[in-house]
Each structure stands twice: as structure tokens, then as C-alpha cells.
Length: 439
Ligand SMILES: NC(=O)c1ccc[n+]([C@@H]2O[C@H](COP(=O)([O-])OP(=O)(O)OC[C@H]3O[C@@H](n4cnc5c(N)ncnc54)[C@H](O)[C@@H]3O)[C@@H](O)[C@H]2O)c1
Image (tube, rainbow, N blue to C red):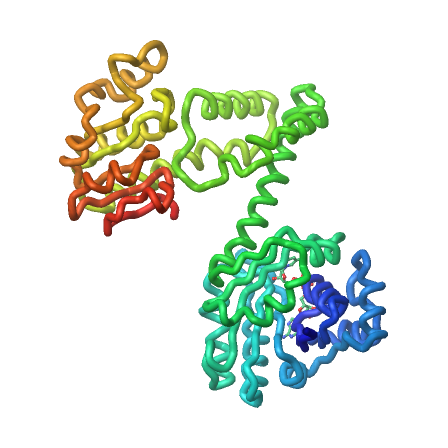
């Protein structure tokens, strides 16, 4: 089925989207305030330099599927769906400038005042979570006098195109994300993307908005990481390319989803020690490695968050489940759970601890020495009896993987559960006062 599309903003995202939707057989009208861009696109020339764009725009123009105008009202009235791809640049402060999104939303609203048929509006510009619902929908509603969900629907559909390969990325994206307040709002978008070979996620508008940011943040972290690692290699006299090639061949831990799920801070006998060693060496070499140097403070901040979450409850009797840095081990060295307990004790909390893998009698060597130095009276806090530990706790901190059946039936009404390990929802207790540390 061919749809009629009006598309606002003929920059990189807008012109590639316009050309690709026309290439897929839809009728597209591009709208921009720039007369030059409108004239170029309307006469079959690409307003941007980008691989394959000249060919796609010329073809779409020849088959009369791609036009452009500065008349936003006419474009909305003649279409079923309006895409919004206007710029969202940074202001001097770093704050997002949403004035173009707001302006176009008002224009679409003005047009919809005159339109009887249901209309779908799709925001593609990168905006912070909440923007579509708190800025765009109210702007369209107030200018049209119509109701979201009844007369029109607004969806969020982020774009994952890279300049330089934008057409290829549009036609074969990593995934298609369709954010809406109701699956019924996605009828036109499903139709538009049905031929696109990619996994499709139908989700809420806020999740869709956030996935775009998380993707870009992660890409930035990857680039910063690769460049700091390369710099270190160069100054340590190690072949960067060899290291990179071997590092990237590990798809089990390195290039994988491992370590990407939000949870508690890292610890153990390796990561903190190795980070300290490398950043210390970097300093000796006079290297600035801000990303690598930020990791220990970032980790410490996460422990602070847990302390604050506990103290914010106003309760001081704490049942701590989990002591070792990772479930299934008894390694306490640099365990963030141990650091958390030490901090809570310092704040005057009474803490009882249960960990099925930790028995003081069995701890030996550096592991025993570590815990005895950090919490000398650990023996009096640790118990192998989970019901007893839970019984005395006003706040239960889940710092290890645990079965819901085990925990659920032992919780008393009124106990507050703070989850540090992101228990699988099926394993979470049904406590009313459940909170995750970062979810
Ligand atoms: N460039 C990319 O590769 C890329 C990729 C994914 C997402 N994004 C996001 O997409 C959005 C657009 O990015 P871009 O690089 O295409 O921006 P851009 O600055 O190249 O283009 C924006 C266009 O919007 C037009 N415009 C402004 N106000 C308008 C109005 N009232 N009516 C009609 N047109 C108007 C401008 O004239 C301009 O042509 C941004 O939010 C960006 O963050 C960009």
C-alpha cells in the first residue's frame, strides 16, 4: 500500500528519509523553510552530498513520487503521515534547542484544524525522553483544538543513520523502533516499515526516545575507549592494531552484551586493581586518559547511590543479602557490597548479613585479610540463617542473585527491598516497597 507522506526538515535525516520512502514507493512531499533546499529537491537534485542520494532523488522525481514545498499546511492536508526531522541543535549551555520541533508541531496543529481524517505525526529528531509527550503533543493539541489518540496520533521513530552511509543504513537499519502510547497508533508506521529487513520493537515513546540517546552515548564511549587504548598502546610500545584485532575477536565477553545490563558496581580482585595500574602508568607517561580515569570514580558514585537509597528510607535496621563481589563466589576483595556495608555501619546502621557462599571459617589468604581489615567485626554480622537475617531488617538489600520463592515468603509486610543486582522480574519479590538501584 502506498502512503502519502509530508516530511518536515530537509537536512541529512529528512532528505535521506524522503528519498528512501519515495524509493520504497510512497508519495513524499518534503517541507523546509530553506527555499534553496526545497527548490533542489523539487527539481530532482539532492540537497545534501551523500552516497546514492543523487540517484535516488533523481529517480523519485522522475516517477513523480518526490516533491518539496515551503507550504506546510498544504503538505499536511495532502498527506496521511507527517514526519518531523528538523534539527535539535545544542544551545551554548548544552541544553537542547527544541524551538524547531515546537514550531513545526504548531504548524502541523494549525493544518490539522482543517483536516477531517485521522492523521499520524512521527517525530524522528533526537529529543530527550518526555519531549514528544510534553512538548509536541500539547503543541499540536492546542493549535488544532483536536485530541491526541482520537483525531491524530504522535509516534516516535528514531533514526540510526550514519552520515556517509545514510541510504544504506536507512534501507538496512540495525533495528526499527516504533514508540507510541497505543499499538493502534502504529498502523501507518507498520505499513511503512514492513519491507525493511530489521527487527522491529514496538514500545513506549519514552523508551524509543531514550534508546536513541543510549545508542549514541555508547558509540561515543566506544570511540573514546578505543582512542585512549590506542594512545596507551602507542606510548607503551605495543602494536595497537594487533591488540585491537585480538581484543575484537572475543565475542563472548568483549564485543557482546556482557557487562551491559545495569546492576551494581564492579569489584573483585581484578578490575579495580588493573584500572589503577593502567591509569597510574598513564600518569607516569604524562598521558591524559579521562575516560579510563573516570571509571573508578563512576563506580564509587554507584556505591554512593546505594548508600543514599538506604538512608533515604529513614530506616536503620538493614538485612544485607550478598557479601561477595559476585554471586557464586566467596571473593570479598574490593567487593562493592562490602564497601556498602562499611559505609552503612559508619552511618550508624545495624547490619545483618547473609551470603550462602561466604563462611568466615573457610576464608583464607588475601581474601580473609581484606575483610578483616575493612570490617574487623564481620563475624558478628554474618549469619548462615537467611530467615533470621531477614527478620530483623527494616530494609532488605538484595546484593546477590536469589530465588523469589526463597525471598518472597520470608519478607514481612512493610519491609523495603532495595535491589542492587537487577533481579529478573520473575524473581523479584512482590514487596510493595521494591526499588531498583538504577531501574
Ligand atoms: N545527521 C545525522 O546523521 C542524524 C542521525 C540520526 C538522527 N539525527 C537527528 O535528526 C535531527 C535532524 O538532524 P539533521 O542532521 O538532519 O539536521 P539539519 O540541521 O541537517 O537539518 C534540519 C533541517 O530542518 C529545517 N527546518 C528548521 N525549521 C524548520 C521548520 N520550521 N519547517 C521546516 N523545516 C525546518 C532546516 O532548514 C534544516 O534543513 C536532529 O535531531 C539530529 O540530532 C541526525
